[in-house]
Image 1 (cartoon, rainbow, N blue to C red):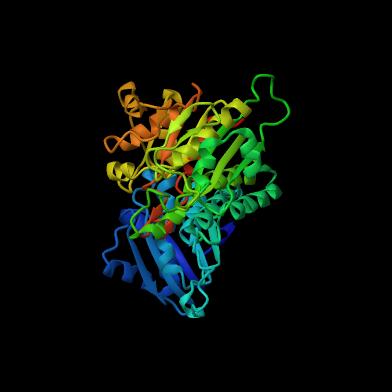
Image 2: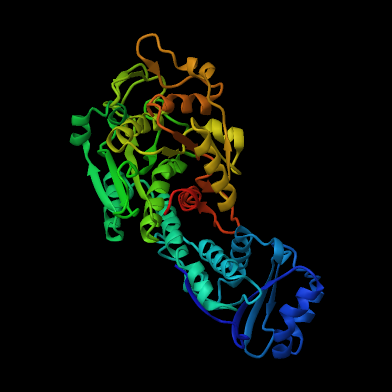
Length: 494
């Protein structure tokens, strides 16, 4: 990960410089003065020639403006009074591409507040992520060199304080991106569980349930999904106890996060088309997000009690695979008629959700899953869809999405949709047909929360990006880690 150091503002006289510039002529003069003196006004002339006005998101790269400066990248931050922390992150991320060849970059951040400077650095760190462990023939000059970011600020102490919790959040994001990027022959359920166990070094309590454990429990829904694969399933429970020993009785109920972890999804007997099936390695992104979130909470010593549960399976077609028409008994005791074996994620979540509310009696449950293509059709790749039976939790999630940049849009639930799940031979069927597919999937999950405050995040359109964004390089996004960390930080700590 990109190393961030913080020091009192001085004029960088060598190397590469990232220069945040406020919009407007007065801001231009203030930002350029020192560099003009050091470069004979080369920076000012270059930015004037580029008609750079400091508008939000605009960048200009100036090569070798002085005898010892390799490059200056000016990034517009708009009106300083209107610069949000999210905007600061985007500014830092936007400049990373132009600075990737520089081993060290100084950020002339004196004009920014401590929080703005810290979040600008966070944006740069997030954008610098790269998954390259399987690139064995890449030449050294093809790889980015950026290793250190020096924040030069007006108040180092305040900036250090603002920066303190952010590396743990970035670590959680990077962990999720790593997990989601891994190929399915490497990251199968047992390997996934072993990687989670390593997080005990952060202070998490980790329990792993194998095939026989879940058979004894009666996880008929989850085991039905995995029965066609040679890879045995796992359920992993992570616990973080950060609220402290001074809690009053009755206040100890944790908050809970549950993730769908289908490490590869062929669709089973209802097999998917071949084109694009390679993308189904990231059908475990919901579980990956929960793991990254729990690592972030433990890493920054969040003052909250939280549990994270992930159901890990591989969905394969074989002679032992589940069939359309089968009836399974879930951990809740309810029976389900299988209609389409490619609607497997909701079956995994059904057992884990019921186990979570029975075992931990959480204050609320939030589940995450790359659940339906219908959600991609509805909201595309811009906003995640979510459902909730609790207006307070829904409002908190929406606010956290806006603040973190990982936006959410609430979708409806209703009895009329529930009728689509009526089965002729079992308590329910698990697919309601093509109309309102994302909604009927949520209605199915709601039958396994037992009235507990709950939200379901369908992140099918958000887990993977086909293009670069300001703080998210192409590939695994880790969508949801920062959103849920923000939810916790703003509402449930202390």
